Length: 92
Figure 1 (tube, rainbow, N blue to C red):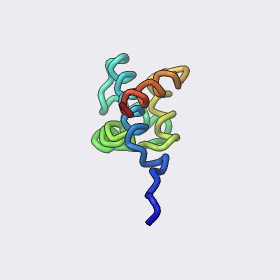
Figure 2 (cartoon, rainbow, N blue to C red; figure 1 turned 45 degrees about the vertical axis):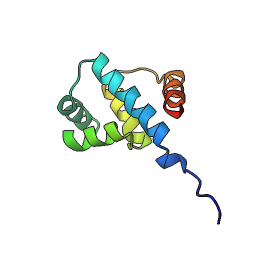
Figure 3 (cartoon, rainbow, N blue to C red; figure 1 turned 90 degrees about the horizontal axis):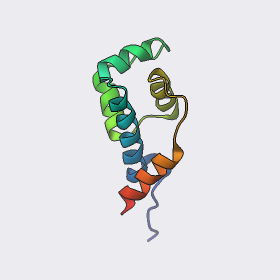
Figure 4 (cartoon, one colour; figure 1 turned 180 degrees about the vertical axis):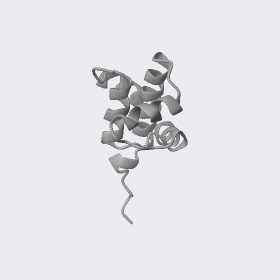
């Protein structure tokens, strides 16, 4: 019987790394989920604070929402090295 491979979209380590990255940025800017939800409305993205929190905390947000959240936090770049380090830490 073939071994089931993990798909990138549901890789637990990557999801955790993304979650930590965004939550670290959220804390750095002293933002709450209701504030982020309100800011996303300026980009015509309507998501409840609870749904946003669930997606971020589970690391299950798509690329568009990932970039949009960082954009409304006024982040100008994404530190892929930081995300990769979190991923490596999760694999241990």
